[in-house]
Amino acid sequence: MKNQAQGRAGQAYLYGRRGKRFTDAQERAGQAYSYGSRGKKIHRYAGKSRLGLFIRALRKKIHTYAGRGPMQYRKNRKGEDLSILGYGCMRFTRKGAGIDLDKAEKELMAAYRAGVNYFDTAYIYPGSEAAVGEIFERNHIREKVNIATKLPQYLIGNHAALDRYFGEELSRLRTDYVDYYLMHHLTDLAMWEKLKKVGIIDWIREKKQSGAIRNIGFSYHGNTENFLKILEDYDWDFCQIQYNYLDEVAQAGRAGLQAAAARGIPVVIMEPLRGGKLVNMLPEAAKKAMADSSRDWSPAEWGLRWLYDQPEVTVVLSGMNSLKMVKSNCRTASEALAGSLTDADFETLEKVKRAILEKEKVGCTGCRYCMPCPKGVDIPGIFRCWNTMYTESRREGRTQFIQTVGLTREPAFASQCIRCGKCEKHCPQNIPIREKLQEADRDLRPLPYRIAIQAARGFMFRKPSEKASRSPRQAK
Ligand code: SF4
Ligand code: SF4
Image 1 (cartoon, helix red, strand yellow):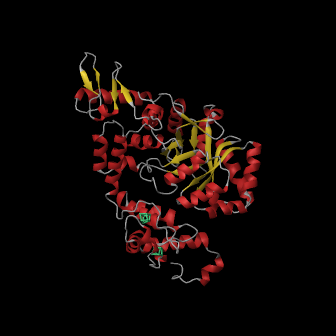
Image 2 (cartoon, rainbow, N blue to C red):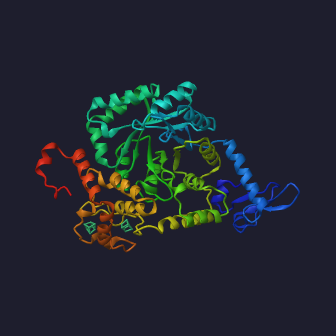
Image 3 (cartoon, rainbow, N blue to C red):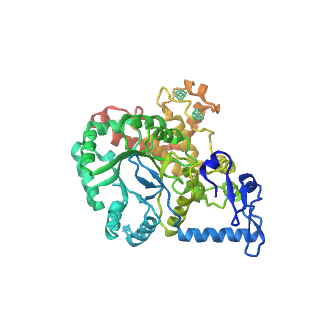
């Protein structure tokens, strides 16, 4: 074992079964070893000995099957413990038209028994709130867990709607209070301002005073600048962001995470594995980099450990829908310490990222030095979605584009570019931004998508009187 303080001081050691001490350097060089039952020396991490490999695999299987090292906890603003692994209740296995409740119950309860105390759902996850409510009631554990759910803020048109949706959620969840309540899917300050106009601030105050809401927060999918503005605008108890080793500079990003932590605001992480893509869609070179490392971690474990390494992260949500996944993630959450990744681990992850990013169309790092564009073009957002088309799938890239660029209240399309060149003067990657934006736009918005986005924007943002007066060209 090595402890955190030793790790920070560069004195990290591992101990063999007979108390032999190994330095990280020895470990990396494949010199760390332990002894088999007959006293035979076995290299622990070199990956050269068949017996060593067998023992490593067996030990991991036993730990995974047990799935219950002591769960680790980090604190909320009141000093209460939150399990560092949270249960994302969006991906329950479905059966017919609904959720397979018996299967979900087994998985949820296995996580609960392993120490998970944070369960995240939302009004719009089909059947999820009702399933969570029923499972907790059946097992009499409501008082022992934290329920996080979300206000569908995009459906709120007036003050009365706040109580209507909240009341419906309480009824589905079979409870009279919510531990963590989030404004769902904010992407810019304008959305929060709209809620303020219908009286959300007084409403929150009243719900907190009555105990119906214990902690108030928001989940976020816009850019870093808007995240910081929302963070500044209210005394939040927590927030939730998309964050993983590939999205270090996308959305709220590391800058957002650290800004929240600096204000003492706990951060819940969603999409730690990019919806499973950092597990299921890794290129061969990325898999090889992991296999060549001294760690016998799965791709999921690499993703989770990268997050747990950062003390600013409070809870990592995982949408678990098998017992194997629950047990494996619980084991990781019982082992992974903040500040425990070594230089060699970061090198491995750099290789993995490089292998993924090699497939990209444009070398944009998301640094945002080119912003703001005087015409409102979301340059890094457009490039990120374009790259996603080639590193993940065309459909995923276009979906992300619609969500994060196409349907924001203020239009941010490449077609708004007037080719002033201001952005290119600031780009450290020397990207010919004007030229690449046009290419990206053609790829991301073929005609059917262009028409669909235009129609959706017309429905969402334009007043009926404006529809008749604006020409299709203006609406481009
Ligand atoms: S060249 Fe286009 S994208 Fe760049 S700053 Fe000017 S208007 Fe914005
Ligand atoms: S400055 Fe260049 S690398 Fe940075 S976000 Fe803008 S385009 Fe991307």
